[in-house]
Length: 360
Length: 250
Image (cartoon, rainbow over all chains, first blue to last red; front, side, top):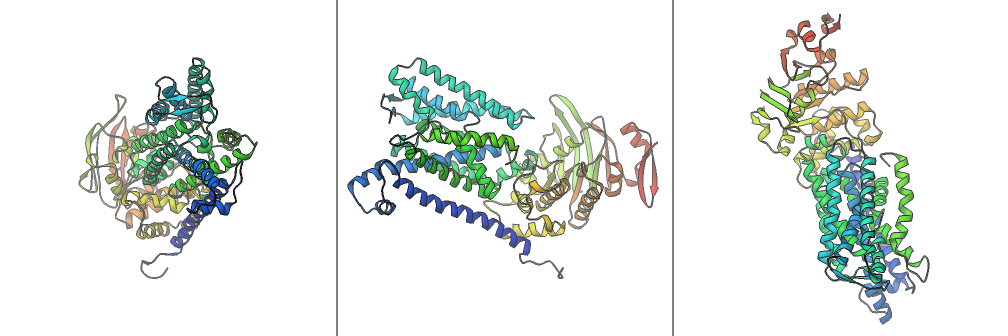
């Protein structure tokens, strides 16, 4: 070694910067891909629009009145909903996986989505927060989105509290936690079925709403509400990104580093439950996005939450947007709700994760 | 005195675990907490940085009462290395960088990165710096844990059985690292240990716990076979071999 301590950055720090720089590049590439997919997705559907015209229309140049109407009223809200909902579900999943120290954690696998769906159905059928009609396209009109969201959130939090209680009991393995989630999921599915049993024909037809999540349902106003909650939650999660890294190393290490683990865990669960609740209330249950996307992001950029949170968001948006686009054109002229497709994708991934053990 | 512990008591579900713990530690000294399984060694260690809250007593680190400090302020003064560190898909550099957490606000600065690099060089961990910790061996992971605690820039290192489940070479390497840091960096260390012979080689002070309280607090010269026999219930003799004290059960 050269005499004296060098004050300049050495080779290790430099290699480390290259290492983190690569992660940034991956995220940027993901964002670029998302932008391309957004245009392609808007262009795709029962009527195909040339991508160039999509870009022109989005930029504010009217190409034709029909396309203006299709893009601004139908395709764009749906595409943005897929992007925002994918981001929200994925970010909830990645945070739950960290703070519960459970690689199988996600809003859906822990039963939180189904509880929120019950809460939303409860608010419409029992509390009268909306009206139902037998038209398949928009079977449920939510007249009081706040009440519906609140109700969905209350039931989502109920499950969250039960899960947090289990976490407090030492030795709760990821598998046990998932079993609790399965139990909660079936309980609230049963609850929704109970509501169905006493519903009239029109209400019954509309109950399908929450069982198959669909991005085509959100109005601009609902999209705005979802976006605000998702955005604020992302800010909260990003502020805590170091703490999630510390908790990943173990509760005691985190405490030794000055992290109030219980508080971080509670607030992380509250925010991710709220995000789940609002997405489920307006779109229905969309399974597995919150589970798969974080793991796909982990594969590419590792477990460092400084990059993993953003990576999961991009991956969630990308995957839900792709799935949504495929679902839209798969069996024409029908438009499948995207949740059916994500479940087909998710179930095998879930089994793969269990087979693979704790870490992917 | 860097550390003064006075009358610390700890209860777990109304069961008395530790009673009337009092001892002191000087700068640049290593204290080994010894005693049989289940006597409360780890509990005592966790009380020192308030991961567990003692029922009563005071713990002064550099004249400041730990139990009145915020968790983050404790983290700026004490680095804690548990028995096990959970592996994740992080590089060793990332994991050590976590030690800077108590000192950063929104993000790390170039100084933090340089400090981590210096720590890595100090501990000779260059080869594993950019490897993922979920691919490291137990000994390497333990070194990363110690490096993280050192990167915290603490006045006191707390180590929970740093050599358990390590092979002989790694045991010696880890303890050499700890001793070097304590001698050169103006920190002190408290560690729980099972291996008496290793403790005698590396520690300066010894705290023998029995029945939840201190049976003896002694320096190397004052350790007698009687103390060990009373604490562990095994008759022993202490022999000197090439200036090293060795405990042999008889």
